[in-house]
Image: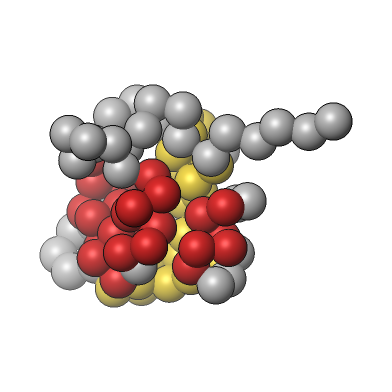
Length: 93
């Protein structure tokens, strides 16, 4: 199944686009979808992964507008048309 990720700020810049699609086999979950994203876009993984290979605490993962805690362990099911997004910290001024 194709899963689409919306990537914001530096993550979109790293991927070269603010919206990317990746293939996820089987019954996709947030965890398998984010792993597929990191595999297809290693530069995004470099920006979003911490030293323990988790997702930085300050990078928000959203599934249909809801925060997902510990996205690499999330068994939350993803279905066609769901919105997935990664937000790095954003500062302004």
